Image (cartoon, rainbow, N blue to C red; front, side, top):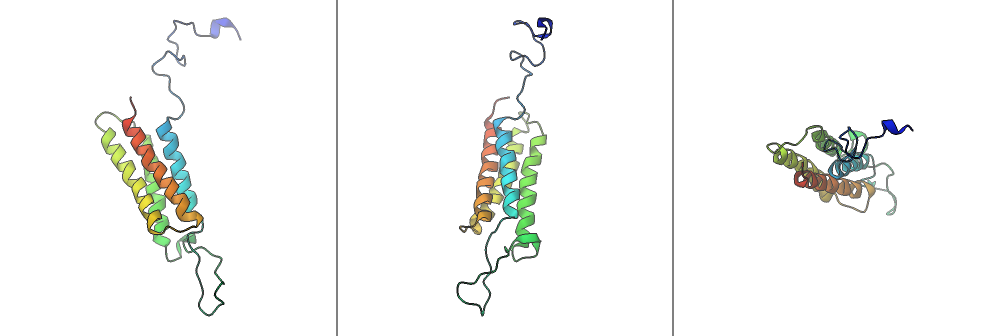
Length: 151
């Protein structure tokens, strides 16, 4: 690579590490929030509970999860989890200013707390509630990190 293309030590060329406008692809708060959203969305399609059918032997269980495709008993939870996780991630599109930082963090935190509350309400040793709990906790942690990060 020709040396004429490399920035000098005293250069303020875009992309140099001395440039205050240089920014990584994702901050820690954004990465945690996006990972939390992915976990919550995946939890919707995981097993939340098994249905037992009356008249069958004691150990027989149904193989279909209750929350699958929104037609089970917990169908409304699918939409609550999806909307709150996607809303928390959508709030990353707004750049926090000193005036809007608290509002954005509270909104994102409420979305994460909704996911945590739903997961705690239906907590069982199944993948759905456990992954939703981890994802919701990551959404809340991303909101706290984003609020406390320096600009």
